[in-house]
Length: 382
Image (cartoon, rainbow, N blue to C red; front, side, top):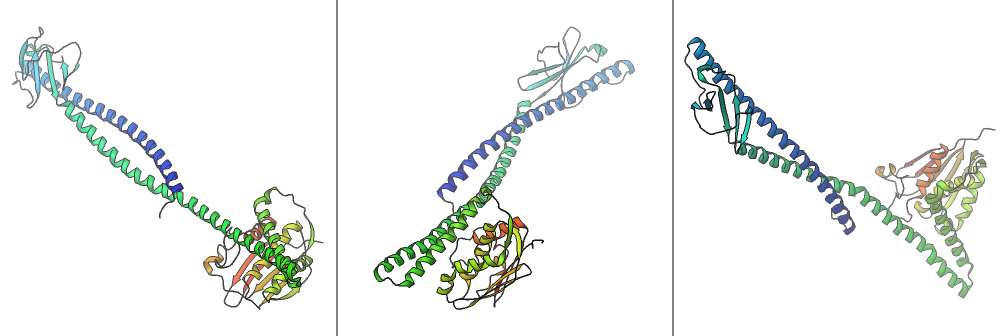
């Protein structure tokens, strides 16, 4: 996906922070690993030198005590000195301090052993191992290589995560952008119609333009109610009281009568008394949005059927069938059954919020013949 300028900046900041953090962690880890492996190598070398010195001392003791042949291990750098520190035998003649058992000089480690205890005149056994720096360098190279591989791997993960984290933000921005455009369009239509009808009414005094003005004003009122509830629902006070649903349905139908006439719709009603406990404004908003949705998507010159029976409200219209994948998300905010229709996608979300608040059951069915929205109210006990 191509990134916008703001997304590129956000990704760059995230990635820069991520790289710095990963760099610090890997560098610290590499430093610790190098020191651990370096000390481990040193311990192994010292253990090897100790064994070599022990073998030489054992051979010297056996040679003097049991008359065995004195032999030194092959491939071992050693130096044998008497109690006066004079050379007896060895592969090197370097002068080194004999005060401590371990001596490190230049590229070599020396181990000084006194376990021969004068047998065969040997007082000091010195063994050495060289090429230490080369071994340290090898460890360092391996750790650097491994650290680079880890860094590249984590870099790839960081890039993937950055893009992954941007996806919800992009979707939210696109949804918000679509909502703003749709809301602007929804407001623009009644406002423009209102202005044109007002001008025509002044010129011709034709009553039909008054009906258009009324319809536009009601549309604006409907949009205002939805937007107010969507943004301020949590801050409003509830006024729970007994409500008869039937008068509310009739009031809402009168509210939309001009729009119903304009589309040539016929409304068929079958309403039975139903009293519930709720906030009247919220129930009006619920019914308004369901009827508004039915009017909006109904075919022209078709019939909308409204049935209220045993506190179960069904609103049925003839419209394009809602795809199954849309049915799953139709009550989500900014979702619309048809993208080519008007609306800003919060009406049915408001219906769902109100139903959830009062624990009403809500459902929708759609096929080639009709679309039915159903709300089952909790009937008030008398």
